[in-house]
Amino acid sequence: MTARIIFLFWTFAVSVWPQNRFSAENQMKQLPGVPPDKFTFAVVGDRTGAGPDSWSVFDRAVSEMNLLRPDFCILIGDLIEGRSDRQVVLAQWQEAVQHLDSIRVPVFLIPGNHDISDQQSYALWNERLGRPYGSMDIRGCHFLMLDTEEVQGSGEFGFGAKQLSFAEQDILKNQNTRHFFVFLHQPVWTNSGIFKTQWARLESILPKTRVTVVAGHLHALAMKKQNGRTYLILGPTGGTLRLERSPALGLFQHFTWFTVESGQCSVAFIEPGRIVSEGTALDAYDRYLKGLLLIKGQLPNP
Image (cartoon, rainbow, N blue to C red; front, top):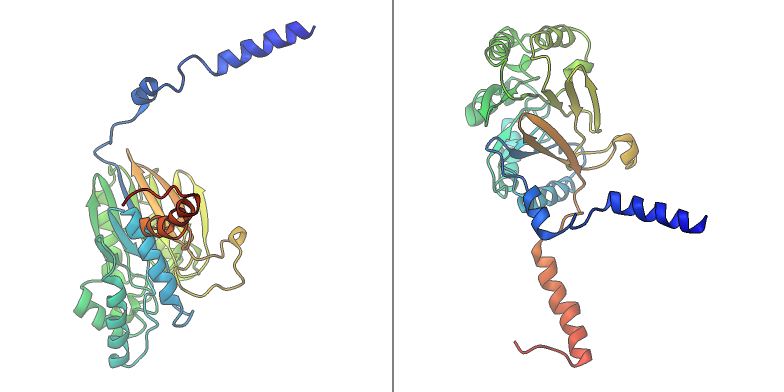
């Protein structure tokens, strides 16, 4: 009986671990080529409500994002606190730009309710950054950026007639894109009133599959997948948490990493503080390894 068991185990082992399974030659054959439509991008969440320390979290996220080098970055809104005084808002934007300047990839900004909180801040956004909504194509995928604070400019609640018409035409013209992304600050699919009605109107003409809708605003991470579409609410990147940190409840600081390949999209959430630069390894050589070799009398010649 024992011999039979051993024999069966050996047969099983061979079947699941064939000869040369992990040889360099076989592994090389499995390496994929880089598809021409593959790209990555990062999304940074809300920074408001957490006081001056929020910039340190934001900067740490930017530093780590720079190490990973996405193709571009999107800020989902609420970068500044916002005030009614133009000079205060200008000063806040000047401070924000100093932090944005450290991002080493192209940056796209979407307005939040702190960035645009009244007619004056709406006018300032248009003056310095241009129209707060639009669209673009990247490697066969389409990106629609919407402004959930358009009421401050048009006086119309919801998206406003002009933006709504733009969004409808944009969606209808891009039905055959590899992947359709919608970015906006407020998760309007959770709202009531005019936003709920207008979003249902846009949602009804979105492509049936390969759609990802991304928002922020709630300072908590949440995602649902429904009928081939993904709805994603991102948590803060420096902004205040509603309760104590709890990743299980979506309550933690993070930036978000998107990988798009052949029209398929995968997402990962990165908590700042877990990625280190090569400088850490360089310092470790001097502080630890060099000292250890010196103690052992094995220090190599410089």
